[in-house]
Length: 94
Image 1 (cartoon, one colour):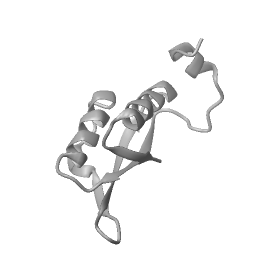
Image 2: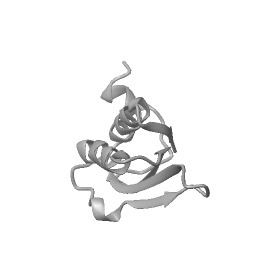
Image 3: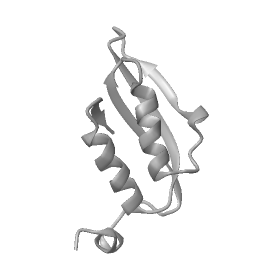
Image 4: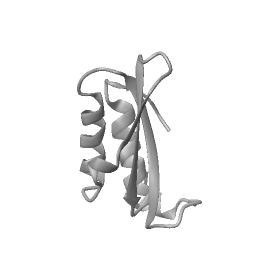
């Protein structure tokens, strides 16, 4: 079972709940940061968008958005990661 139950039985180095930073990188275009924040909010409704940290690349072509949210389960983190990596504006998720 690769569902929530499977995620619960898998070993995790994290203890939940915990503050979990997720860094998302993509092209520095209009709407990128908002798209990232919308995905994070779908999975962590208590995330405060004002806490998102944004850092442009040295040449200014890319933007890194770091969102630290209160993670309650490995399933939540995995689901958010999957949705972010599938987003067409996202290049990398760490």
